[in-house]
Length: 158
Image (cartoon, rainbow, N blue to C red; front, side, top):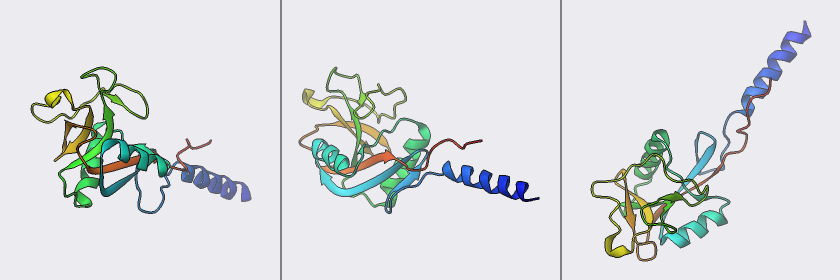
């Protein structure tokens, strides 16, 4: 009679392992945690700040992430209109790569007439009212979103 209770408890414990756990102030989505920084930095300083928090600039790599990131920006009252994400084309012009994973962007959310590489100096990407916009990495000081793996996102056992 104790066996079903034990198995039920084990199942609950295992299912609990699949739930993403994020630090206070971070937003869980899938197997990651996201943090909106209202301070405005250039892309390189934003990247360093995310690293100091144990993460990296967010990867906007799917429709569900894109929707969540835009809600995060809206919920935090972004004032600059732009928010850095971790996409750049440093190695080859118009080949946009996620800085952390090194993966080429497969799904894109470019705004009208973007990317434009204005004056040949726009190599970093920011969200701009729900769409991507390439910007000068050093000259623009905007909000940014950090990402890091959630804890407790392992697959359920059993």
